Image 1 (spheres, rainbow over the protein chains, first blue to last red):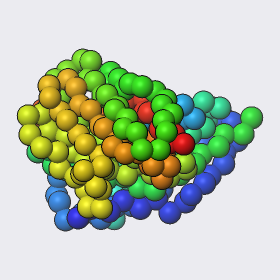
Image 2: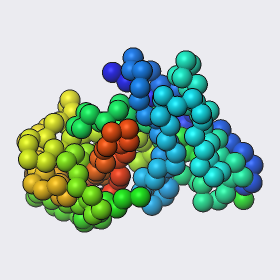
Image 3: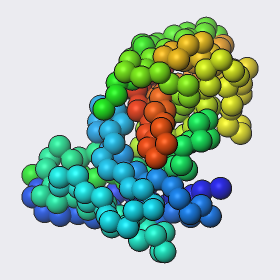
Image 4: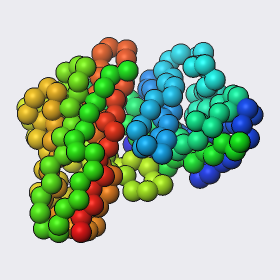
Length: 117
Length: 117
């Protein structure tokens, strides 16, 4: 079974600064997907970024980038130029390759990020 | 991204009544949908996997007779909370799985807040 660990329950960052959210996971799979989801106060789950395990290049999406270390089973999210709208809960998640009904997401406990003006 | 709707967004009911929550995939046909439960400041807990045309698969500890799931079409899954009690009050989120070879992603509904009095 897969596990996803987010050990920091809360973080705070000053607007315009950079913050890194940590995530580690455990799996015996060689191929898989990793995700970071954002859940703002509206509680709508929003996909921030995804990474395929077979790709060595770290994924980037505008101000969001990941540091994917497959051997260490680490998948951290870096948010650059933090904005007030980045205030949310962030969840790290793991998924096996598409196998229909078995494509469940395994979530970490989440981290509450507050961006200070 | 694809749109998944949920209805209702909020529901308040009396203890002992049943409540039905609908989850619709608006942009694609979803053979697999998932139902989650989330308490404040906590992660999403997977309740069950809903498969079109077959019985749902429930996670350990989830009462299948209490949380009835029906996935009658490729765009609609429903969750019925039967004989609801105050401890069933929670935020319920559904997601629809979009899967193709080499790409899979869950798209989330906006959630339903259930309050049982």
